[in-house]
Image (cartoon, rainbow, N blue to C red; front, top):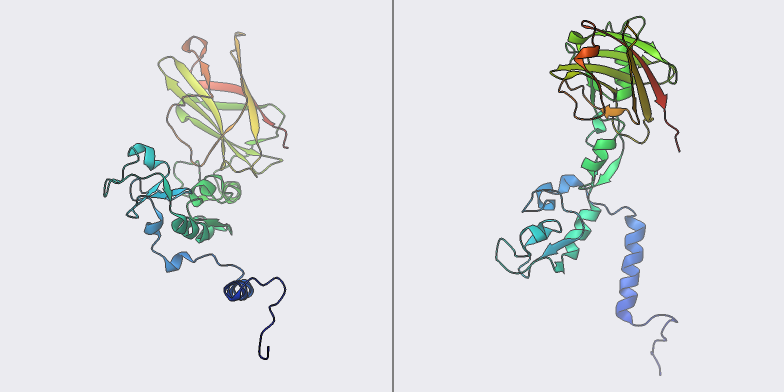
Length: 282
């Protein structure tokens, strides 16, 4: 027949052809289709019940009211707005929006260049190399990434001449109990260690912390403490891990500490032998 069109091999119909062409144009013109948070009121991406960021799966009732998956059991799968059942119908449209929104790390001003899916920034922030760490000196309000904090401490009058230590080699930490804290700097690694003591009715608690974020890029350490009195009494404490902290706390620790009973104290001066050991890195 004159004027008849011959179908192209593999083309099912006109509609699928148009859809295929639109997809090709879209993939060429906009390879990254993630939404900018500047275009959105980010509050719409938070669950209206717990006010936390939506995480997939996201559910809706028949009227379209949304709830995050963790809230549905808390409300007995009953929509608090219209009382219709919820927790069974997925809201795929909102899930797509949440997946497409990308936000910078909260520590972007400190140098982090990570861009994260909305709702995952808080998880990343806890492990971010650029999480702000506070200077352990009580009269200093400096905060910055742990590497910058180390340089700050090293370049100011905070440090003393003999407060270095080498990983794997025991060092003597002599401190007055009333001082509560002694800072040591790693000689072969960029690390600040806080040795703290707390006088309590049952004795003196001694603990060791590393001022750094819980980032996978920060090395892991364990520590040993030996306390020996002049008359020969001795105590040894071995910890499998040095706790990482962003800011020194002066609250009595609840775990990971050595307890020296009052019967073994000889005045207010503590003389400890400490060894910081680097754990094997996989």
